[in-house]
Length: 67
Image 1 (tube, rainbow, N blue to C red):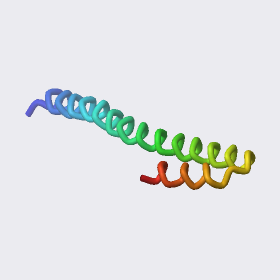
Image 2: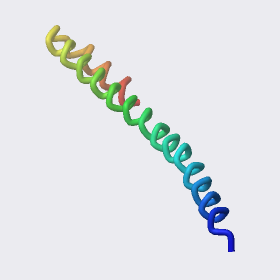
Image 3: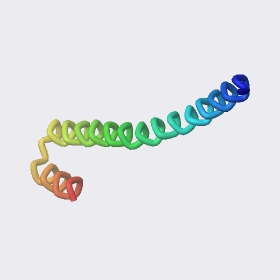
């Protein structure tokens, strides 16, 4: 029974799963960051339009941004 070969193969399997996990985390990170940034940008636009007091423009913005 060769314990060192078994240990080396288990270490190799563990090393191979780490990049996959990191890639999966990164793939989930960007869509959530993009969605949060888009929501914040929409809120800033709505605040600016409210400050300008243009109700018609605000309705147009809401209808186009939700489509």
